[in-house]
Image (cartoon, rainbow, N blue to C red; front, side):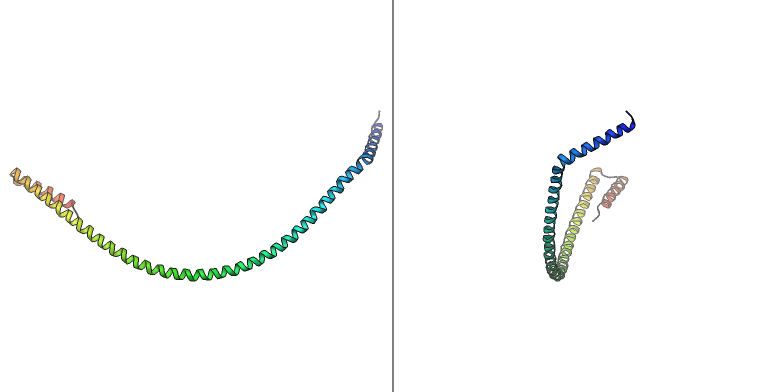
Length: 161
């Protein structure tokens, strides 16, 4: 078989296949395309309806947005007025509270100062009595007396009011 024979058989096969497709497949394939076309037409019609509804909804939304903008402007103006009033009230209250806090702090500082001074005095007296007691017990020599005095001065220096 030569090249021209196989080309002839390929052509014959093609013609037979085309005949069979046209004879038995044209109607089902046409029905598929027709159904698809009807589906597309229904989808386009639905999309047109949805577009109309969306445009109507958009127009309504723009109206609502304009109303909300007016309301928001009114609320914003009221909020500015309220904020200014609240700020003035807060300033007055904070000044009063600051004065109260200062007075309370001064009183607390004075109480603490008094307590520290009392504690320092008590500590110094205890140390002095301990030193005197030690001197009496030891019958102290002048050198021992100097040592105890330096010890007392060091301890007294640690106590600061």
